[in-house]
Image (cartoon, rainbow, N blue to C red; front, side):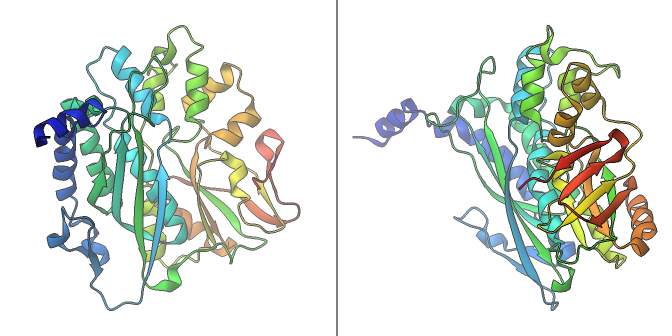
Length: 376
């Protein structure tokens, strides 16, 4: 059997490298532009290892250090991008922020350990080879991964883009949508910058950094509700954006916030991304603490307000969405003012939300007089 015949039969089975290759090259070209980003943190990628079966990198400073790794997936957010691409009629692919969302799901988690991201590897797994052939969408997605790496200061030296016909199948009316995920490697230098939550104590203050909107948690609920509407994701919100556009606002990075807190030697007792579980997640430590939230952001993101208007209960919203706060910093009372000012100078809006108290492990949301049980 000839090589050409083997290739043809494999393509019939769902994997056609000739169709996938243009997307791979778009990602490779974007990745090459990121390789120097982690240099400022003392991490250098070894160029000779690029394009092999792994990538080598090294820490060039004499400082003792730790490595921290996490793996995260985007979830269903790009399903909305695909729906909008098919139905909005704007010519946009709506993938210009999807790489940012995907990478930040991992990057915003790794910083919760006090690690600063330096290396990112991605996987874009589609249900068919044809998905990779759209050059405009490929370019937008690759560029958004580049932007994520630039924002976070990490390199994208390797990735994977398989066609998984027998595993990845999009829910109609979307014809095809890939599963996106990735791994971030972060560095903690020196090791005493590590944040484990062990220092969290009664009396600590809860400081929150505002979100940009939905980020990438609670997307399934948004899809479920949007498909009930007459205009689906083209439903206009009061701010003039469609529901789909608002849902696709890119996730905010909190890397620079944590980096700035470290540079100013803020005493940090805990860091937490406002992701799955919503407000209930802040009772994350397995300790007998009550988290009393006394104040909140003055403006709730419009997508969340709309979810309330169409019948989603406030408790469901608080335990599904970030509700306007995308990242939490737990500090001693003496550090609150410095934390907020440091965040402001780094470009973030921070608010003192409440405090940690002795008591049952739960969250008391005083603005709405709601008590939320901790996620076990």
